[in-house]
Structure formats: structure tokens, C-alpha cells
Length: 137
Ligand code: 5GP
Ligand code: ZN
Image (cartoon, rainbow, N blue to C red; front, side, top):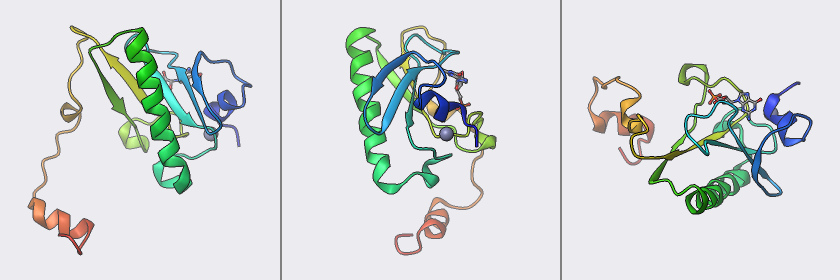
């Protein structure tokens, strides 16, 4: 199977790497939304979080935090937005799990995450909670 981000993780395709550890690689997005827009990936292939080995998710989040610290100290943004597109409907183009880390600067034209989707539920919040987890709903 050919996967672009597996190829980047294996250093067969070049990328501007800003962080690496045993399980994780972080590199700048080739089409950045902002200075320092970074993609953080698990080195082992997983299409979404649901496919990732359980013990790898914590490591991935820890790596995002490490990259955020590096960017905070170097580029000095005012804040950050994290984003994970999962599935075609969400706009996932590369089917290898990646977390977008977008540094936020004054006047960057962006909005908050809550502005992304407008699909107000017809059922009550309690009903939906009960569907998701009947124990707690
Ligand atoms: P998605 O929509 O799947 O969440 O985002 C994929 C991201 O990967 C896009 O923002 C796109 O610019 C980035 N991208 C696609 N191909 C490459 C590449 O070859 N190298 C790098 N560094 N980024 C890429
Ligand atoms: Zn892959």
C-alpha cells in the first residue's frame, strides 16, 4: 500500500521536520494556513484515531504538546488551534492520521472551531448522551 505520510515517516519523501521521536514525526504543512502550521503523525500507519493502536494515542498527544511548546517559544503566536479531519466528509485528504497544529496570530482571519459545522440536533442533549452511553445518559 502506498501512503504519502508513511513515505514521509520513512524519509522516502522529503519534509520540513520540526520534531521527531520513536513513534511520532512532526513536519510543516506544504500548504500552510499560517506560519508554523504543522502536521503531527504517528509513524505507524492508521487512517483515523479509531485505527490507531491504543498505546500510541497518548504518545501522539504528548508530541503535539512538545511541538506546540517549540512553536510557542520560537514564533511566539498568541494561541493555537488543533484540528483532526477524520473521514472524507470532514475533509480528510491524506488517509494517514495527522493532527494539524495551527499557530494563531492577531488578524489571521480565522475563526473558532465551533464555526465549522451547523447541524443543530433535533433530539435533546440528554437523549443523545443516552444513545452514546446508556450508562451515563
Ligand atoms: P487533510 O485535509 O487530510 O486533513 O490535510 C492534509 C494536509 O496535508 C493538507 O493541509 C496538505 O497541505 C498537506 N499535504 C499534502 N501533501 C503534502 C506533502 O507532500 N507534504 C507536506 N508537508 N504536506 C502535505
Ligand atoms: Zn500511512
